[in-house]
Length: 451
Image (cartoon, rainbow, N blue to C red; front, side, top):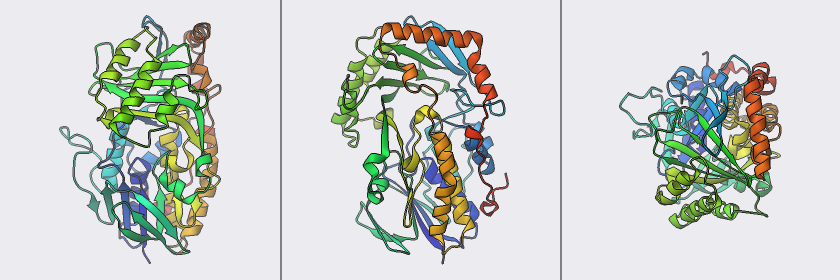
């Protein structure tokens, strides 16, 4: 019997999985229906992400490396600046094929552009946009056996040995042969099917606000990083000259200490009301009010003056990792950040999501239609080594870039400046393997990806 599949979440890995399942079953014999739901009213955009190591291999196998290349953000690398705005260290990107990717990847891309690419491809559309076409602005939501439904979420999941019954927020109830939770770090699917969900999120005691400001003449094609005492930093990204500058304000603190009040503000992020957003903005603005160096006062003012109802331009989050003892419960499986978020600090979040989608699709294609549980077990067993490697934090991270005192900031800036002058970082990345941990992704001829 053909399978009926529900994918919860239309971020990167949900549409990527839909694309692979569709391509593995062009005659629609294996998959009766592949439905992707998204609780937002439309596809979300977001800020800059990247693809590295094994993720590049997956994109190549999907035949999407060249379409991806056309959309990349041309970021030169990372530039560290002092309170006067003077650059004291620059670290350029290291292109694929020449060792490990640096802090800036060869394949930097705006999240909305990658989501748009995957969405189009999953529906059998051309991955390339017309020159005058903006991302996420077309209304096709169904093609073949792939269907998208927006502004809906799941309120209940129950299952027996052969099917999963799902109740949706609009009151409908439907049965599926497989449900995939690809709904991010704060996954509702995980909370529904795993009893230890609350313990699965491990905070790195780092809180970050993301927003955008109009591009200024001071912006150039670098990630620009400024460190401050009190375990704080601000950095901007402006490699894409056609888009606003991205701003990241980060505070190293904890829920128990909450030195600046940002942790308690972020804890309310499950609500997107304007009052909650306003409180989060004020908490982060107040956390940087005492800093007068570089462009910090300008960015704090921009944050305070931005409208509270523009959810796409502001987002606050607690940075952490998701560690689950299992990703499978019956015929429900977790994919991407929902099951094994490695945190932005590793630089491997998008890559791990793509590898997870590829291995899940490969195991489903490899196993017989009636053996979904065996496919899910093989997915979990096969992906564990990748997750273990991808979740390893860089040495000293995240503390190394968050100094408590002015003296500690001076020491860090001196060490970073010395590394840049001696080109030590360049040597390190060139001698490290590009594929993290040297792990190779398996081959799945059943997926019919010959690229």
